[in-house]
Length: 191
Image 1 (tube, rainbow, N blue to C red):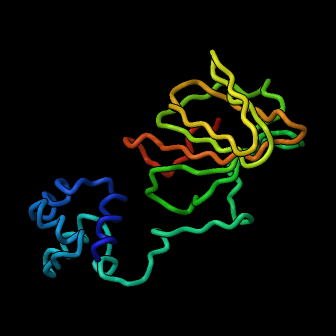
Image 2 (cartoon, helix red, strand yellow; image 1 turned 135 degrees about the vertical axis):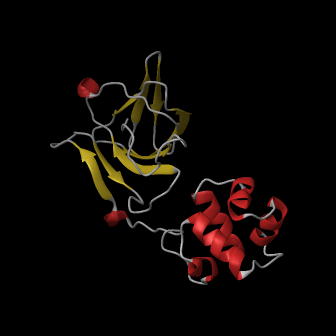
């Protein structure tokens, strides 16, 4: 129960203090439960399940929850946006069925011609890793050339856009840490 409780608490974006207050226990006691030093009473377990909005059985189950571990095979990505025709940008979602996540991962194939790609900005932070090909990440006052294996991490509030620079579209893993104040399972404005 200990590691599961910690994961569920973090998925619900609750601090030890906040969850302890909701359940009516001390932060110290809750910390001991999370570390496996103490076992909660049935009453406390029921209160924890209610506060975390889960069935009490999930707190005690030995099975790995599907929503705690999600595997997406290469052919199982979800098309989430894209143009038609060769060289048009398109995006494939990763772990789109997982709710409550704090990161939004997807694979991007940026356009060869950025003429129709306006600068985008959104809350959060962004990480790009070029899996194949080459690309340019453009900011209003700076352009960064990226080759296979290169990566970049930046504040997504900076206006940005990306284009492929090779003969075919680059394949780029993008991970966005969405604004913690908003829902994390929505897809923000794509670069």
